[in-house]
Length: 71
Length: 232
Image 1 (tube, one colour):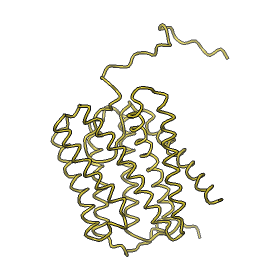
Image 2 (tube, helix red, strand yellow; image 1 turned 135 degrees about the vertical axis):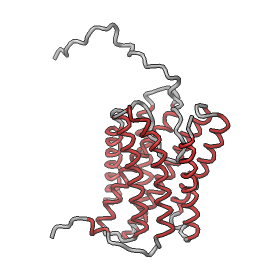
Image 3 (cartoon, one colour; image 1 turned 90 degrees about the horizontal axis):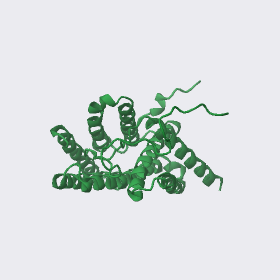
Image 4 (cartoon, chains in turn blue, yellow; image 1 turned 180 degrees about the vertical axis):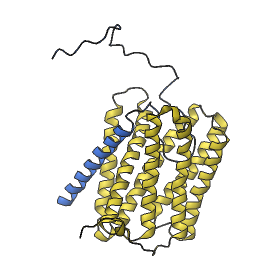
């Protein structure tokens, strides 16, 4: 039982480490995808339709500078 | 649209992938490293399929995009299981095969669950988004697992040369792709150099594995522990 728990702990550590590494590597990513399998040229991602620049977020109305946080 | 250089590298890459399976077959290690060879055979089949679809529908077509990313996800899962068999080989003397299998399935399920929880928040094209993200996440899981396996090889004083060559080449390959991606995003102006380099790096793994199967006999031994600093 303790060996199985050790495996569970190992799996969790690997998962946290991998996702941390992914965050580190893709910190400055422009949305492109890192592909590893095979030597074929990578096409654009299918869920990014069109090449238009992204609009500003809709919940920031106006162009006024953001005030300091109240606390 | 890919240029002649991209096609040339791709062709060399396919030749190297075929060479891995042929070398393994000739040296009668096809069964011993079965999943590694299944992964390589899968790469050959997917590359041929990708070429056919690219030639028929074009680089920016939906058909090529979907085939490329879905086949990549399947191949990443194959590579993940191939890596787990390397774990089984390294830990074979500890009789830990059942634990390796348990850990492999648990980690795959955990990665899939994590990926779904991230992707579920973005609604558009959920399945495609999930498939691509799972492939990306499994790639990083594989990268970390390879480093951990190398640590285990040093710790256990593993001496099987072919096994060490297979693990090390996988580690170098993962690291090259990840470093290339990080540098490419840090310096976008250099992407014209670093994007084609991914294809060149992709040739490294089949080349190194073909060498391991062809030149290194199964009973060859070396002492990697000499590389580790051991305090006296």
